[in-house]
Image (cartoon, rainbow, N blue to C red; front, side, top):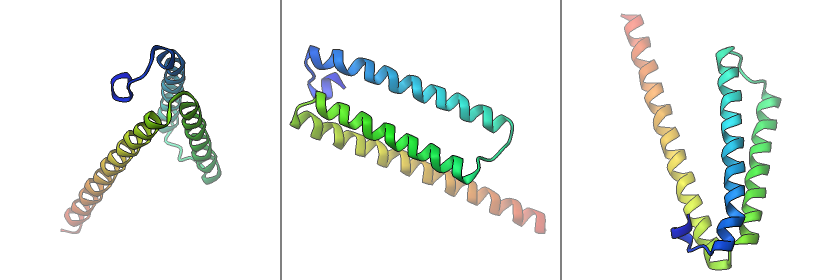
Length: 113
């Protein structure tokens, strides 16, 4: 990020704790979801909705903090990079869904025969 956005040392010092906090929160959420998956309980709709809202709130807050730290040109680059990563992640998720769908179709065909 430092090279991509051409950050100053002051900006680096300001961003480092933000990224560390974001990574720690992501790890904690991952462990929480892994534990829920181990119990094989599907999240209730309202809990899933609340979780998605919390994630979006954190994303908005992070973006505001980055906007406060970065200059206008750097923030444009930051948004562009984030959009690219998001698009890549969504594309990967769609690929997984399609593979799962095909796998399930094959299973049903085998069961019918």
